[in-house]
Length: 399
Image (cartoon, rainbow, N blue to C red):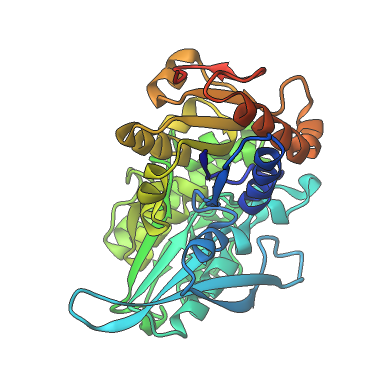
C-alpha cells in the first residue's frame, strides 16, 4: 500500500512537518504489509512555506537572516529563512529564485493572543526580508503569503523597501501600522530600492478576496487576527484610503484585484506599489513539489487542514489538491482540525472522507491533542482501507 502524506499546517497546532511525522507514526502502527510512505509536507503560502519547498527540492539552499517582527513594541529580531533556488530560465540565463515566507516576519503565531491587534501591527519585517532576497541578485522573488497578524495593506513592507507615506502633518515614521492608514494623504515611491527594477515579484496566495468591502481583508480576516467590530470598520476605511492613494500616486487600481485581500492586503500592496503579480499559490506550490507525479503513484492520499469550511473551496490548498487527485483517479482523505462544511461542499471537493480531529474538544484542547489524534486517525484509516474507518465521515468512499 502506497500512501502520499501531504498535509498543510494546522494553524497554531501542527506545522506541516509535524503533521507528516504524526501521520507516519499512525500509518506505521496500522500493521499493513508492504507499506510505502511518501512524506510531502505542503503549505498554502503561510507558515511552513519555505520548509515545504526545501523538503521537496534538495537543490534549494537556505539563507538565514533576521528581520523585525509584526509588533513594533517588541524589539526582539525574528529568525527568517529564505529559500534560494538556483535555476536557468528558458533563454539559458542563470539566476536564483528566492522564496520569502511572509509568516516568518509578520505571522499571527508570533503575537501572543492578548496582544493581537492588527491596528498596531506591521509588515515592515517582510520588506526587510525582500531586501535581503535582493542581495542574491535574483531575477525572480516569490513571496508566500498567509497566516499573517497584520492588516496594513503591505504598507510596512513597502516602507522597509524605501517607499514613503505621508499624512497631512508630514511623513509617517517607520514602521507604519494598520491603524495609521485612515490618515494617509500621499504615497511616494521615488526612494524605492532600485534593485527591484527588472525583478519579477510573484505573490503566491490561496484566496480570491479583494482588498476592501464585505469580502475584503479587514471584514473577512480581521476578526481572526484580534480585531473587534469597530476596529474592523476602521481597518477597512484605512485600506480603502490606501487604495485611493495608490491609484492616484502610483497609477494602479488595487481595491478590487482578486486575491488583493490576502494576508491583510499585502497582495494588493505588492501589486500596486511593487509591480508584483498575484499567482494562485496552491497550484504553483503543488507544481513545484512534483505533486501530480507523486499522487499518481499512491493508492491513497492523506492531507491535513486546520479547518474545513466554506472558504476551503475558494483557492485553498485542500481544494486544489482534491481537484488534482480526482483527475488522477486517486482517493483523498482529509484530516481536519475542525469540520464546518456542509455535505454538499464535501461532495464538490470530491474527497473520499473526512476525519474531524477536534471533535468534542474545545479549541485549546483540540490544539493540544492534535498530534495524538492525527496519529490515531491515520492508524484507523490505513488499517480499515479501503472501507471507511470508525470516526471517518465517508463522502464518496472507494470500494
